[in-house]
Amino acid sequence: MNYSILGKTGLRVSRLSFGASALGGVFRLVDEAEAIRAVHVALDCGINYFDVAPAYGGARAEIVLGKALRGVARSRYFLSTKVGKYTSPDCYGADTLDYSRARIRASIEESAARLGSDYFDIIHIHDIEYQDRRHTEWALSEGYEAVCELKHEGRIGAVSFGIYPMDLWKRILGAVEIDAALIHNHYCLYDTRLLDVLPLARDKGVGLINGSPFGSALLTERGPADWHPASPEQRAVFRRAAEFCREQGVSISQLALQFASHHPDIPTTLFSSANPDSVARNVRWCEEPFDVVLLDRVQEILEPVHNYEWDYR
Image (cartoon, rainbow, N blue to C red; front, side, top):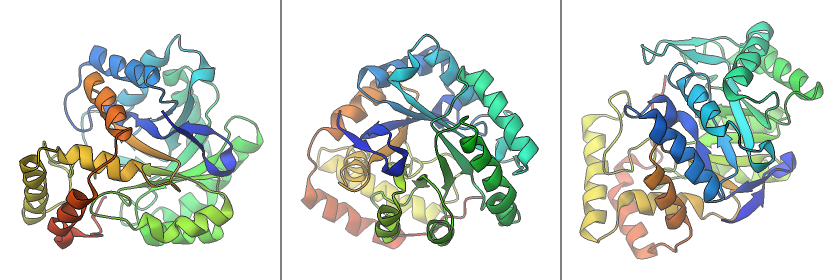
């Protein structure tokens, strides 16, 4: 496993990092024992950065990750969670957004209890664009101030956002003092807009975390969950790309992971899996070169959805 410094956070993070959304059953039903093994395989493979959120599976992901990390020396891993977005475990999409100082402080205590750690290396302010951006300014004022206070108190190490829209990223990187940025679905086979903000992030020392190399499962053989906003026509484009890869003897997931994780200026790429074998396979893929000719052909197939702005809500 290779390691890079995550901007001015100073954290020396693994090239691949572990996103724990899958542990909460966001993509499929999950066996808890298998999910815990997936975390242990990640650690054994040299992955040292784990990210989670209370919104994943109604806090289920935090609970399972906490069980998996129990007894593991805290010096072996960096840990981040998120604040501001909360989801009921039995009703996907019924999100509560709350960026108040009181709720953020309570959220940190709740996450700490579930995860078994009083200190978080990074806190991401979560999905401030959701619900038609009704809460964006609240998140950028009181929410941001609350997280900065936690940093000044020594409770967390770094301030970040975890959001999707590129216009908001350009605003935040241009005007808000942050240490890291979790940008998802913007450096993968069909969308490379993360590169638009890379020079600004580099100039400001912001550590970039590339989330969703599989495009929220669009770039997998299984395909995305029902909740994904891609239309039937768009899903058909991704199926054609997957079929073409299969005909060449390569999984589209392999190509997607390799492409997303090989940019020299992106310190870490965050994937999610609750399957131990998939975790080990992803690490193996990351260490292998990829076929640039195949990449060109697949990106041609994906041209109809190139840099498409999904309506995540």
